[in-house]
Image (cartoon, rainbow, N blue to C red; front, top):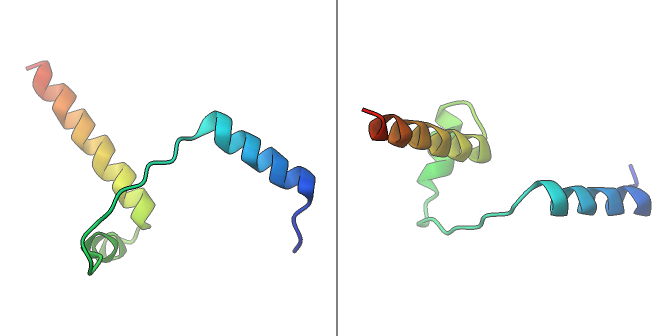
Length: 64
């Protein structure tokens, strides 16, 4: 299925306005991807969950 130029422009605009791209490097062997797969989720979903849970825990510790 071909993507129109208008759709490409709309997607690029959405990405620029709504999301930030964060890149990082991991050791070879990709244990992060393997763990995510074991949990039945994508690597991106696992990373987002790990960050969210860590931030929640950190914020809870500040208010104890």
